[in-house]
Image (tube, rainbow, N blue to C red; front, side, top):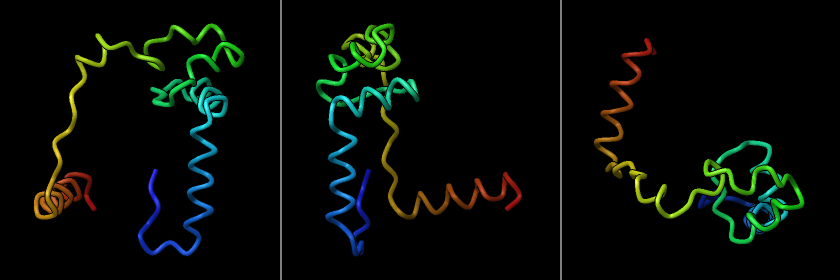
Length: 93
């Protein structure tokens, strides 16, 4: 999540972010989307939301699984623009 640098309601956006990072809320969201949950305490909160998902490595991966993960390389603006142009030509935009 991010707040655009010219946002006029920055405090509201930050409150929403804080809300989603509450462990109970994060666990509820993770149970719905079945996606990795980075929120500390959400695994414990998942016990109350859906105990069958507590040991799901796709939501709460352990260190050995995370060690196999790869990050995408960061792109500078020039490279990003070139990739976007190439992608647009592939999709016919």
